[in-house]
Structures are given as C-alpha cells and as structure tokens.
Image (cartoon, rainbow, N blue to C red; front, side, top):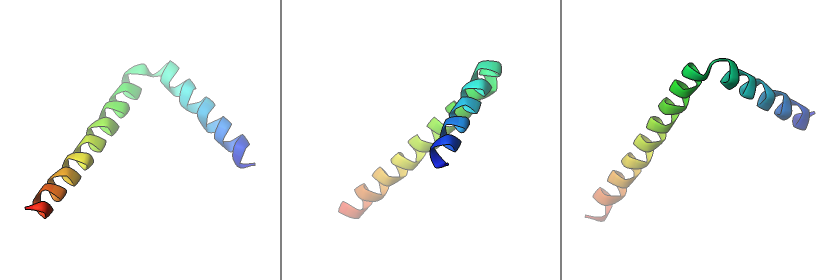
Length: 51
C-alpha cells in the first residue's frame, strides 16, 4: 500500500511540474534557499561553538 501511494505521489508531482513549470520552479527555488539557510546557520553555530 505504501509503495502504491509513493508511486501515485510521484506521478502527481511529475504531472504538476509538467503542467505548471513556473510555480514548480519557484517552489524548488524556495526549498533550495531554505536548505542553504539551514546549513549556513549550522555552520555559524559550529563556528561559534569552537571559538
């Protein structure tokens, strides 16, 4: 059941990207920015911790 839901979700995501490439790119850009901010903050934390 989990595997089938995973495939359905993947198909829906591919369909969304294919039919709405602009908003999908905005979402991907936002996720990338968020992840880079998280790693930047972790690096700052570790740098401050070591000083």
